[in-house]
Length: 639
Image 1: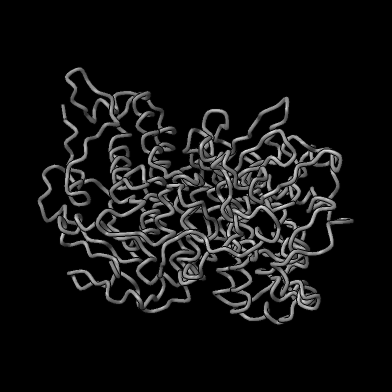
Image 2: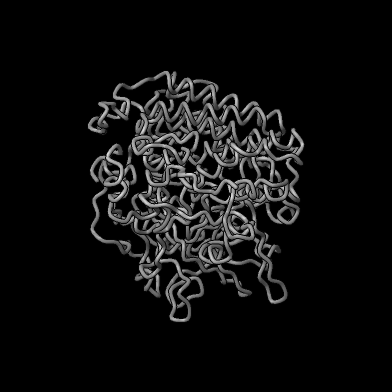
């Protein structure tokens, strides 16, 4: 028997051999490749092993993009690994969220995942009891997974080695000491492999939801391929002179030093191709009004529709639904960090709190930033945004703020996505078992000793004074007689994301155009807003802003920040746009220990050590030990 002692280039990454515990074991306890691929059943297990390396995207306890930025915060005694990134505690001795080696908040080693994918591709055709069409499909799935694992590492580390095949045990020491390859080479490899996989992957309709949900299809492959091109065109990877010194011992510059505007055209074409494929397979922006919301006043229709674009399982907007955590989008523990419900009308708790920066970033009800809204400026709402409004909620405000209650100016006159996405003090929480508005409705009370606020009875409270409403279904219900939570596949990619990528690429390639506005306005219309040009012409102190590439770039970036808030997109967007200095603004929330409005509504610096993010923080460091083992690897800048 051929023992599984494939060197598989393990020493080149980790410096030590890693035991392969993913195989069945033959009677003599020697794991073999032949045994793993002896029949269809064992081969299918190996296929799922390849899937098992997918990072837990969307899980606030594991996904660095969900908790490692400046958009959300947790109280200081919550030991989530991602907070080490948010607090600039990264190091090169034992890096946090280390997908290169596995560990420190990364539960998988993605190089091992790539090696297992290679083993699968090398052996799938030797299995005699699998039909040819199934071999083709399974191989295509694993090709995509291999490409995606390369992309995930590329996004974190920049230039990486390309491991297209595993090295045999006879490989010499020089062969296993691989090099990191230049950005363009890595991008070409990933996108070519995704394109190859897409041609043999099934359309979405052929993936059986009951038994195959979460497996790859051609829409996923083409959409993620477009995403890779977006990253390649972005400033972090396109003419980034900050990384001019990253030259290996062959004399090769790993980062292209000349900006190439044509990369945006390539990205735009890839996005357009993916969008057309999505449309042809019935994908569209989610626009359904749930029957339980139909009985409520119309303002709740937009809010619930926007939330259900995330939470309605396998809906028409979803392109890639991640299911790699307990066969649902989020573990139960992680769900509890986002939201806990109880039977009382004010019974909303959350540990995962949006920061003031995110709260301010949402548009006014007129669809423009509150800092440039004419109405906000003329009425001095912007200058007074952190002050308590003396008049209580009344009239149509009752759909957003508990009638007769008071809150600050910042919470009034905001766009529907603000109210759909955020829980705030005295804010209405439609649904969750209470649909008879206004007679029977939930609202939130975030001051200390109130149910949603800090108390000695529970560690589950928001340090910022806000909660993330959009990431749990309005149909989650905890009443005196019911207790149900709807789990859903996390939106790794949805159509709105792809539309915004396309609009960004078009604008960067050739400036403002009708097509750019078409895709932006489609997303805004679903969110209850007028189009970009109409909104800025009518309500902004800077009406010409959408007319220039630079102005529209700012609008597109803001739109991504709002539409995709709390979905793990901002973390990577900030990096590819080279805007990491924004993290140096002190994160703030409200005073969580305040038990009255005067004490609670005081801007408070959130707990963190003094930090200074810089150029080095765009990428992860490679562990120092790996560099000592393989002298051909070069460390990322600043580490």
